[in-house]
Length: 490
Image 1 (cartoon, rainbow, N blue to C red):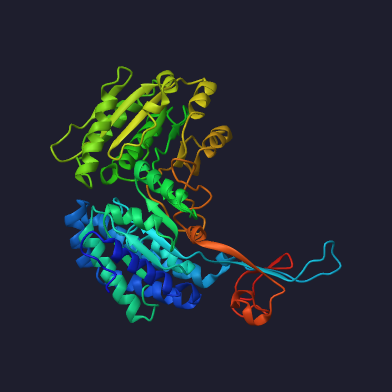
Image 2 (spheres, helix red, strand yellow):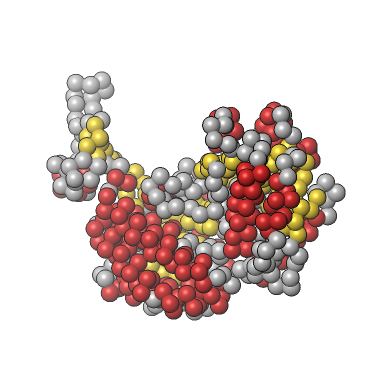
């Protein structure tokens, strides 16, 4: 039976796909082969770029340049996780030799991380390649040794099927275990996937409402499973008075903000949606001027356009909100919108301004210069976010601001903008609720693999049962900790 289903997946079809994934013994494959398969997938996506790009243009309304760059990112992610798998430090191999002289006596202990099991991946709407069928969750799960069943996003179904067919073909041709990858479609299939007893973890990128509902299902199972959800984030920004004290400083921050919050129609989880700006700096007029030539943008789905219209309407109806810039609304596109509110109004009713608006909208919070305590009180009511940013002057003292924002963000940015998430070992893409359901882990970068692993320790085990990563002499040459000392023989 093909894992690529061209209509809403039935319960029997889903059961067969998940059962095949669980029976694939993908977790028994070695890291070298998994790296080979990830490279093969990357090569195939790159080779089929033109066809995939044409499908995505029709289904998503995103520009050709944006989508082409996203294909490149997807290819790079697959290759990056191939490198992570080969390097091997992610398994955290640790060996403690037996020592009967200790109290209590220490047996021989060998510990590492191993694959968790079948991973359900929910594709995102706004990244039809990089967080979709062969996106970051799938790449990191494969690198970890976990078979994957993807729940396709309804916003780009044909693209999802096409990429899934590519994946199925490439994995089969390159010798990967049969059944290690599958695709399902439909709301009911998504619910059943989270509840299926053979699914061991879920990766999700989407709205807070849907993510919370699925998270609750994962927790309510007879045997709960980890649900790694990336949900809502407003990504607050603080512009210091010193940063806005010169015309050049104001112009630089205003132009950067204009580009960041309107990028691809503001449809990024890292869009700066709340910006604290000092009063009487001229910032708002400069920002409005920077937005004057920014076109409207059609959003990804009709549902998103409706939700964005409702959210903006609710803000504009408030007496304490002032419009700074309104690009006007088209019949089928969203235009840039900037509103402003006083610091007192924000603190009095923060929940009204902490909602994520998926589109080209940002809220300015005007705060008085010379009253850091008032600004600190406002920052104290912020919810968790993926990022927080500080725009400051060179040599300006900002540790207090950094500490306040570190409390609520997974990544703190200085004199930069949050849109654009590098693929790197040091990346952190996750933050306190509601940004993610599990802020201990990243969904981008090497540590994303940690979500799909679980520890196991072998005590006084015979050599014949030990994984190669824990064998005497370190035959794989991976970084290991041996009797407390970090070593590598590469």
